[in-house]
Amino acid sequence: MNIDIISDVVCPWCYIGKRQIEAALALYAQQNPDADKPSVTWRPFQLNPQLPAEGMSRQEYVLQKFGAARAKDVYARVAGVGKEYGIAFAFDRIVRQPNTVAAHSLIALAGAAGPLAGGLQDRVKEALLQAYFLEGVDLTRTENLLAIATSAGLDRAKVEQCLADPQSRQAVEQEDQRARAIGVQGVPFFIFNGKLAVSGAQGPQALLEAMRQAETAAA
Image (cartoon, rainbow, N blue to C red; front, side, top):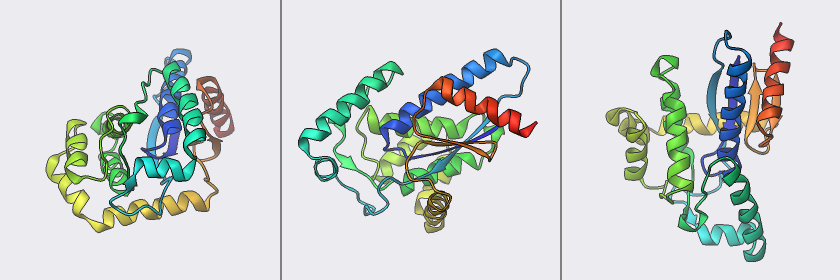
């Protein structure tokens, strides 16, 4: 079972979706103890591809996107769902809305290490989500990305090279464009065995059912 998850590191529903797929995978393992563990690959998507490399003020971004009154309701709802999955969103700590190409390039770098890296890509993805949503870390700053990535297990020299390489960012942008070309408009977006797609944070049971359907279709 191969699961591709298209998401962004500044999307709160993507963080919730990560917890939901983790719960679905745990259920799958319980129900299929002899089955191989599904392979999960994180794919890039930019919620705000128009943002400059230096990002913009988070306060200004929220006001432009939602307006003050609506933003309060939107983030209160997200925070409530987050609590159900053990995520203590700290939106008030976020001061910078980043362009996420550099962050995605690090996730891709971790993914290139392959399954023998023991979940390295997942750790880097988790570390970036946690840094942004729980700690309010500015993901536009190279030194912050370097610290996050190395703490998750990436080699420092490789991280420095990746962040300095324009081709790494170009590869992310191209994959983002491919996602849009196949119809991805919102994230998280789950693709099971390259065939069955589920859009949005649907919950563990819905994701588990999608996994079962994908297996049946492949049989």
